[in-house]
Length: 228
Ligand SMILES: [Mg+2]
Image 1 (tube, rainbow, N blue to C red):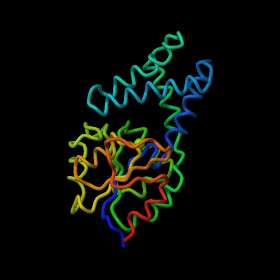
Image 2 (cartoon, rainbow, N blue to C red; image 1 turned 30 degrees about the horizontal axis):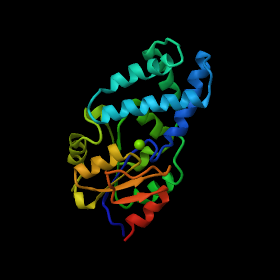
Image 3 (cartoon, protein in one colour; image 1 turned 90 degrees about the vertical axis):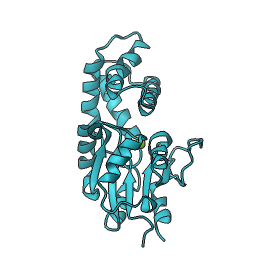
Image 4 (cartoon, rainbow, N blue to C red; image 1 turned 90 degrees about the horizontal axis):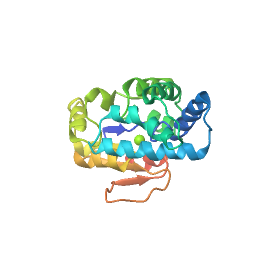
């Protein structure tokens, strides 16, 4: 028996290892344009990207702004002028190929999918997310995949979750759990609509004012949470 009849999963750094895929894609891009493939430039990229996504989650920018500007902002720091849109397209083509799983993801999904409804809830680009989930052979576990790109709202917005829950048969917030690595998107989003939240904190990030019902360090710990 399990405690929930519906579980929503974030994708990046929850079931697919985005950090690893991102690094491979960035190195491929840097190699292609003859830039140094060092860890400094990759961590600079991550800083810029994180800041831009935070603004997006707060509703301060739109997605196109991120994709048009993240590489121009990065390379500007190194005195290199690039066409941001073209860089983005090249990067995306490398990123689309990355679908490394987070440890335990298939085991957890394989166990859960016969016992409850499973949904993907992701902020991202539809074509990229569908391709990566399909290449990872994970889309078979989900009853439906919800991408912010298609919905027109993003996590943690209430409108995003209202669109999702409207499509869940016999939706009961008391029997619904969201699992994700982002406090600002996944956990806050879950809190906003009154469902239980499980924060996957693989890298030991510090707690914040956004408090999840559960905190886990690895996906396998979900078994302890959902079994009753
Ligand atoms: Mg994530």
